[in-house]
Image (cartoon, rainbow, N blue to C red; front, side, top):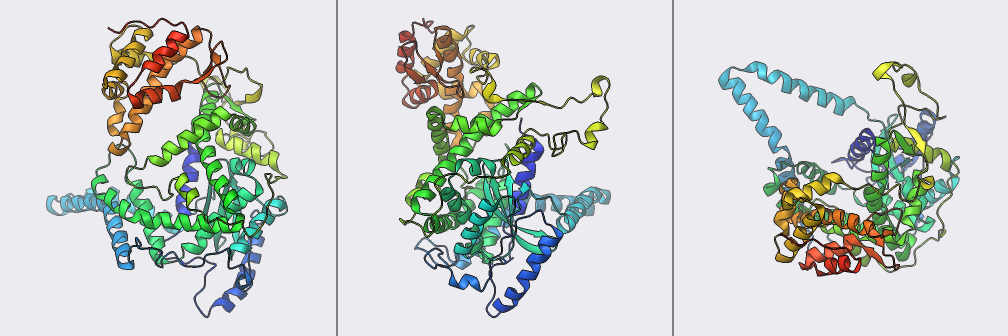
Length: 580
C-alpha cells in the first residue's frame, strides 16, 4: 500500500504551495521598482544558496527578461478580457466572496451555536476546546513550516535537467529563485515557497514524467507550470482559484450538505479557472511546439491512469506480504510499453475527464486542451529522448522507499536508522522491515490477482443464486431487461453516496466488474490464458483471439445487450446455467 503519510504530505504541500491570495509573484514588479528588484535578487539568491545548498536555484535577471522572445510568451494578464464569456471583475469578486462564505458556512454555524449555548445556556466551558483548537491552528499557520515534498536537485548533480529548466525559464520570462524537487508520483506542480526567509517558487517534477517524457515534452510541461507564475499574478485570479480549492475540499467525502450551494458557484467560476490552464498550454506550445505539447498532455494522462490503476495495486499486494518492489519504475515503464495497457489507460483517462459532477476540475478535458493548442513549431528545439539523470539510481531508490513507506526505516545508504535500531526486538514487538523483490523477475501470472471469492459471494448474494454460474446468468438477464442498476446497487451499497451526475458511470463500472469475476474464472477453466502479464481481464483464446472482457462487458451494459457475452461463452465451450 502506498504510504498514506507520503500521499498526505504531497497533497498538503501542494495545497500549501498554491498561490496565496493577494500576494504578487516575485518575478513581477510594480512600475519603477525594476532596478531595485534587480539589485536585490542576486543577493537573495546568493544567500539562499549559502543557507540551503541542497536546492536548485534558477535565477533570471529581470533586466534580461526584456530581451526575451515575445512570440513565446503571451504576456496579457489573465484578468484582462479574453472573450465574450469573460466574467466581469465585479462578477468574479462576487463569486470569490460567495464561495468563501459557503466554504466557511459550517464553521460559522458551529461557532454561532456554541456561542449561543454559552450565552443563553451559561455553558461557557464549552468554548474552551474549540478556542484551543482555533489558537493551535492559527499558531501553525503563522509559525509552522511544513517540509517541502520531494528530493532536492542540485545543478551540479543534474546539469542536463538544470539546463533545460533554465532555458525554459529564460524563454518564458520567469524571474527569481526556483527550487526543483523530484517526487515519486506522476505529477508536475509549481508553488510559492519561503526558504530561509527568501521568497521563491518550487517546481515539483514526478520521476515517472522524467523517465517517460522526451526532453521536448518535458520542456512543454515545465513551460506550462512556469507560465502559471506569469499569468496568475493578479489578486482577483489568485483569490478565485484559492476560493475554488477551498470550496472543492468541502465537497469531499460522503456527506456533502453544501453541494446545492457550492455546485452553481463552482460552475460559474470554472471557465475562469480553466482559462488559466488553456493560456498556460498555449505558452507551452509556443515554447516547445504543438506536437510536443500535445504528446505531453496525452502521455501525462496515461501515466496518471496507469499509476492509479496498476502501480498502486502492486504496492498494496506486495505490502500485504511484507515486501516492496525495488524495480518498481522499471516494471512501470515495461507495463506502459504494453499496447493493451495503454489502450485501457487511455480509456480510463477519458472517462475520468468526463466525470466532474460539481465542476471542481480546473483543467479542461485532455482532448479539449489538445484541440485548443495553437499550431506552432516552437521557439526552441529539445531532444526526442528522455533526459539522462546522472543520479537516477539514487533518486529511484529514494522514490521507491517513499512509496513503500520506508523513509523512516532506512537511511540513504540502505541501512537501519537510529529509530529502527531502538525498536523492540522480542516477541510481538519485533519489527521486520519489508524485503525487496523484483517485479520483472516474478512469474508471469504472479501479478494477476487470485479469484476474488468475496466478489463472487457478493454477486451471488445480490442475485440470490447459489453458484457463480447461476449468478452470472442472472446478471446477464438483468442487463437484458434493464434492471441491472438495481442489481449494481445491491452489489455495492455505497453507490448511494456517489454524486448523481457521476452515478451512471459508477453503476456501469460496478456491474462490469462484478460480472467479469465469474466470467474470467469460467474462461480460465476452459483453457484461456492471460494476454498480458499486467492485466487480468484481457484473455487469449486457444485459437489466439484476444478478448478484453472489461470492454466487452461495458459495451454490453451500455447497449443493454448481453448476447455478445453469451456468444463468447458458447464459443469457449462453457455451458451457461439457465437463469432462474
